[in-house]
Image (cartoon, rainbow, N blue to C red; front, side):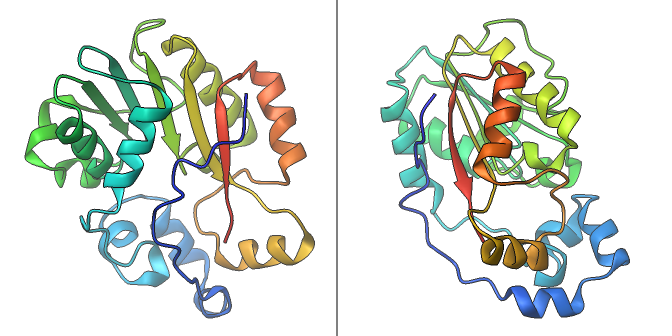
Length: 217
């Protein structure tokens, strides 16, 4: 298990945590947690503020392929794939790679690229509908923290179960009180978050041995 930044080439966006904190209320949080149109394509108050394809996942796809040494005939799963932009880029960059995506959002899956349509499944990260050891690699970026602590443990166990030993998760975290406050001002959907040591305890309880990285506000 090691700290690996597979998203190091993505744009680093500046988030206005104070502005969101001033607007955030129970209704906005509830709507965001539906992971529907408002979350993906509504105003920034509800989530992404418009989740469109802009090519940012291309370098991430290349990092993933290199990190896991993937090639034609291998099989990879993206847990929490949203509109499947990363799934699409993985397919395009590595012909013959069998790429699958899973997400809880019917809205997002319905807006996925055409080359992913037969590769996507609607479902929960807590109960993956796949066989043991089915995938050469499993990734989950900014997804499992949307579960409770118990749900995170279930998700990590499921990721381990369906993989052949190679996995990567990126999750919400913070390193000090200032970062924690900024995170709490910003967060809409995460149910579990914490300091790295909090996550290491969860990894240990889950017997998770894959790679990981932190999302900081």
